[in-house]
View 1 (cartoon, rainbow, N blue to C red):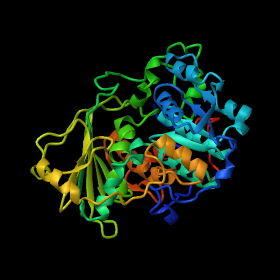
View 2: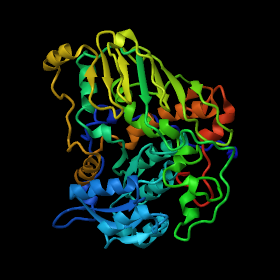
View 3: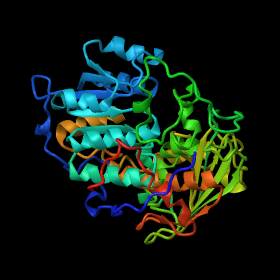
View 4: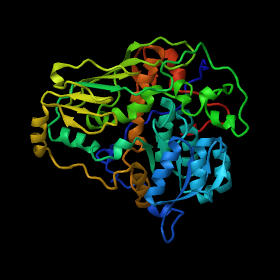
Length: 461
């Protein structure tokens, strides 16, 4: 589907705030007063509404339920009759139920402290913006938003409404993640010049053959298709667009990169202060029809300039089962299923795809002996290493969660340059300050993705 060009919106590209430096991952900065909780009482729990309650939404509900820190006051899903929503409805039978998040806020907004947004990528923006404008704290699944304009506005809303907003990339809360920063600060990982990452899991669209947009089918009686579309331009309903299959189409998702960059590339992005690349380029992509369908194999390269005393970095992403060729300096005989490698001038590092289980690249006996020389955890953690608990605790204590929207916007925008390069099989030279692709001005319509009528938010920001 072609996106209609729109005039540039007057969105000031918000630059990163210095006051958050050093606390982005610690949750140490005070953001708002914890007494804002409407749930104040004997248990002082957070009154939580969950929007998107099947699949990943159900997993979030399970995790929040285990924390014991929330009261589930509302459940919202565009298809409350779908099989994948039934577990949540059975677990929380007393919560009020809605199909349209706007009606939920209209009818019981005063009873809600916070919302969990676990819907398709393109719908994150409308729901999160509506919630934040009402002063609700937001836990939003990655990749936070669908376009550059969306994530910039979400970051602006986080600041304007002084809420605890967190993107749900789980690894950002885990213990192993913080070793990256500790090792770089200790000089163990130094002068990283190359990063290689790859995602090797099979995805729904791998091997699919499509000639165009999917044919119209009858809308199930239990589904509110118009609300499901939220900001996306009009599409005729087809079951091939929903329940995870939406990630196969650029109009609804951002493919494998949008899904997994927020995991696999999070640690190097944060620990090396990568910021925005000067160039993002598709080095390989399997041909697909020009209908917005996502290719099943691709290799994307980012070029990052020097940053202070940090050297330039070249980073490559392989997806769809593609793996990089093993290089002698990596000192490995076999790569894990998915993972990431950082090459420094002193030591190099390898991880799994989350990125988990980091270790220095050296023979295992040497690594086992070297581990005793590694620094202890030098990056303080305020809350338990669990993203749902971290966010709930941040709300209760008035703190900034680690993967807050200020930080997540930077990470997601970097990933979105890769998504754009992959979609158009091209080289992207992106001016982050002015939100423009300088070598392809015709792509501005995809930078400032238009919202469908009735789902426009944040224009005053």
